[in-house]
Amino acid sequence: MIVDCHTHWAQCFADRDGLDPAGWFRVPQQYGVTHAVMLPFTGLLHAGRIAQDNTDIAAVAKASHGRVLPFCTLNTWYRDEAISELTRCLDDLGCRGIKFHPWLQGQSVSTAVMDEICEVAADRGVPILFHDGTPPFSLPSQMAILAKRHPSVTIILGHCGMLEHWREAIEAMNSTENLWGCLCSPHPAAIRQLVRRCDASRLLWGSDYGFSFADMVGYRMEMLGAADISDELQNRLLAENPKRLFQL
Image (cartoon, rainbow, N blue to C red):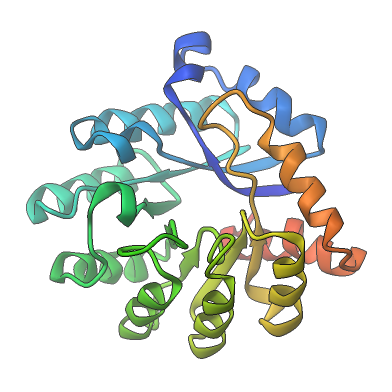
């Protein structure tokens, strides 16, 4: 088992394949990926397309026969609409988590609506994955503050600080027990430090594949390999941790 914990469903795949995930999965399968957390993409760019993007991803997941774990996104500027859409996604569409990209979506994590969404996520047992590593809205420390306010919800740093803020991600994770990190974007030297200095049981791996046809899976696999971490640790990141988190 290999779980890619950070992928997207972009319009280019929908235009080419409809809602059939078979073509989308061809690249991940080349590298042994068996399951993928699929995050929105169009809905992150256009708030008016959030509901349709959530619906499409759920349909893709259904057609994947369990290989795709669908996540939804929300527009927190409108509280009632956000909570209604969240309820629809969890109850009707079977979404397994929530994704926010505060930098693209222009949504601060320090709002009453975000607090309410965290309470729902904690009650339903679903994680929230945040894009992180780009100021002003998407820094690891901001997600850590939110996680501290809501210790019962699992919050995932989608990029572990990326290329410039990975040190902040380490400090954030070490100060917050319900904060996880996805090794999607840090360079090999940063990956080595993250694995060495953080709780390895709260680390995941992801490729960011799916926002275009580019082979991001192979690229991220090479980055992980260049970090020169043990096979046992790689198995925890690629299989054991996501298996436990998503009860696969």
